[in-house]
Amino acid sequence: MITKIEDINDERVRHFSQLTEAQLRNRLDPSQGIFIAESPKVIQVALDAGYQPLSLLCEEKHILGDASRIVAQLQEQGAEIYTGDRNLLATLTGYTLTRGVLCAMRRPEELMVEKVIEGTRRVVVIDGVVDATNVGAIFRSAAALGIDAVLVTRSSCDPWNRRAIRVSMGSVFLVPWTWLDDYAQLRQLGFKTCAMALEERSIGIDHPILREQERLAIIMGTEGDGLPQQTIADADFVVKIPMAHGVDSLNVAAAASVAFWELTKTER
Picture 1 (cartoon, rainbow, N blue to C red):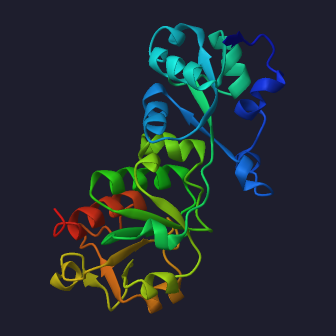
Picture 2 (picture 1 turned 120 degrees about the vertical axis):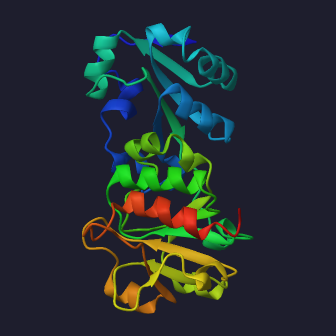
Picture 3 (picture 1 turned 60 degrees about the vertical axis):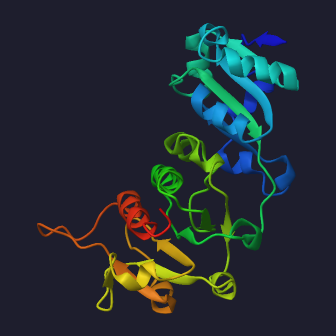
């Protein structure tokens, strides 16, 4: 059934317009947490990966157009489908929908670190990166360049953030990930840690010793201050990307792409 929305205060679509990211996450009851995916392509990636849809908000013209396949799938699964004209939906969501489609989905259960990195050789740790665009870009590069899994510290932006999902182009649904609370877990599981930082003891990212490591965790730090000094001090390797023309560093998302390409060469 497709329901047309006429009122921007309709409670049935409040999670698309009235709930903050923190409220969608629902820390008090994680089993009831929701995330919002947008654009037909990203939503399709999530559906193909097995994520559970709850409801769809779709501009009228897309029901028989770009979103027709998604609408059919959600109807089969019994999810609620809401529609409305473009101006109303722009008012409801606070901005004009880029692709005219939003889908509310159930957040999956948080996975154990041991489960996520089982059988992996190259993982990335996102440590204190708070910008959703950067987190999404790191996930996209991780998926494209052969990173086996992503671990995220609690001080980082939630990868289920709407913007992070959109920037990743759905890659957050393709690469296994979970939250990391203690680097000791990695060491106990046989990983060497590689902190990306400009320090006196930093070695070049093309250093042969890095490719020799059986299991390597690449740690990417926050955009401004970089990694905490203790994290750098505890790392097995401190690694830099050689720069030219007096440039001291790259944006964390760009640096991640370079690091992933270089440090997964052995796997490729």
